[in-house]
Length: 360
Image (cartoon, rainbow, N blue to C red):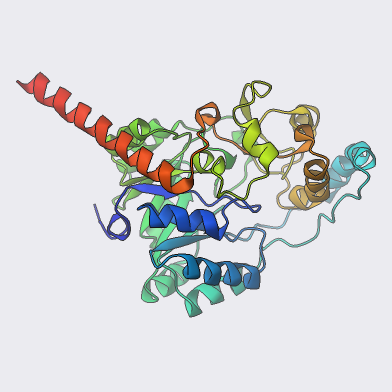
């Protein structure tokens, strides 16, 4: 297994890029400074907005960090389904006293412009969600000195990642909070996601590139488990969402451990693509009827989500969270990295001691 990625940071701990204002430069800097790999999320930002955050982050740390991009999405043909969903959401718009968003606000998330920025101002690591970049893109980033990662949710997707020339694959288990990084959005596959440990094992037997494990990881002992399963590092999102450096709304942070929110589920209600969040009123009422239309539905519901946050109404917000959300700790991000590293070391020692005892 290549050590090119893990040589960049002392601990095998990657802070997941969480779009929507969560993965701010302060969070990424704190993680990188503590020995993990901090990440910026370029999703839903302009190319210039991404560039400004990169500049800000470079002013906060000299350590390596990553930037995540969303892949452009194919055209969605059934505009009628989006119109029907917009009609269903009319009551939400009236309740929050806002207008629905324009579903045709853009499909490519400024992908080409963001790539140009990353080639002109290379960062240590670039990752991609919702598909696989071309070999030309991955090769150009490699020539610029950037290590590339691409999300996969199945062994078949991981094989496509390897064949395209990425340096490593992110194995995203179904436990993960936020959007599932499936390469193609196939509604018939809803609910068929693979658990992380099974996925890591399958991908390790399918590809030869390093694997970063993501999905529901909240403790150092879980990091030890995925490393034992063959991963080179672990990526954690929800664990860092609760930190003071995170840009998540306070209401979102509090909801992670609020007894009112007892479980998570995958839903299309907020964006049109499967994403895991805390089950609330909006998800229950609209999830069953949301079309498979990303990013149209994302644009459509954006004003509703903002209005709900402004009204401090957690029942109307997209409360993205992984299955381990009740284990969230309100530690500073740097302290969380150190705590996870200590837990990992203790778990690794226990595994080693147990193995030696069994051999003896």
